[in-house]
Image (cartoon, rainbow, N blue to C red; front, side, top):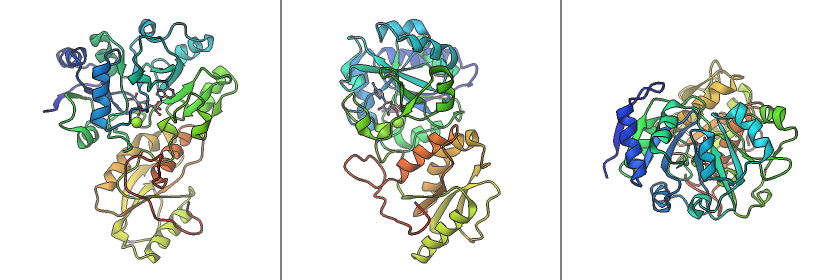
Length: 361
Ligand code: TXA
Ligand code: MG
């Protein structure tokens, strides 16, 4: 199939493009669209056959549930009977915004959307194109990130086309996304609530509203049954191995020197390089990641950097790990999963068999 591309203004999208894309959603097709976090791959959440096409296009396993996107709170009536009390406080502050809330689902939400779980994940994206598309479609839109399963998420339309061209009906291209890492997934069926995936809304911000919030660290902590892929050891992985170091220039340099001593030519080594950091190693391939300490900027450029490096004919990517502060927590999560070795829970990428001794991790 040919994938139609509509170039649209992120603030004021052309109504004709939106109505053409919405018509495809209503007819059961697949449209990729921008949100403030990453691009999503959307289908009518209430149409089981349309939702199945998402899994086929992404090569996503059926046990991995999808987020359902809404444009206003009245759409919730399709999805949940009665949101819990603390939902309304969250909605006031973070909807629209990069927060996904897991709640008990209504029976009419197809099992394909929730992978058979009794819960549904709901989010109102903070992007005019996404909101206009959902509104014009008149239905909630199920949308995972618009990448092949296990690959780094797409933050530009070009990233989407790289993974999914010819597999989807169309894409609304509104340029790069702002936040750059996916939404925070918060399970509100638990007391205290549990962050299943750190993301665009920080734990600190949630705790101001909710009091204590836990962060799930292992798949076993998801008691709903199946592992949540946001929690899988390996995910977001490029086609080359990723090596992580502590977050300072000397540790980064030490890791690069170890790779050289293992026989890597510098031009095979790609680095997510914070602005102004120097390693003194000539000839390595660097992506200018942004200012260390500005975690918002680093989050925005993270997946673009990984995807850019992987097509530079390098053999390994090295990156320093930010501290778990603000969006630093989400960046750490994505990088750690991109670097995890391939095993039975894994998805995407090549086997990561490089172990640096000593100070790298
Ligand atoms: O920012 C985002 O969240 C993007 C944009 C497109 O909205 N979407 C996204 O979707 O990242 P996806 O499918 O790549 O990740 C959704 C995450 C997965 O980790 C999935 O397991 C979890 O949400 N999830 C979905 N429904 C769930 C449920 N009922 N219970 C627990 N986890 C759920
Ligand atoms: Mg994803």
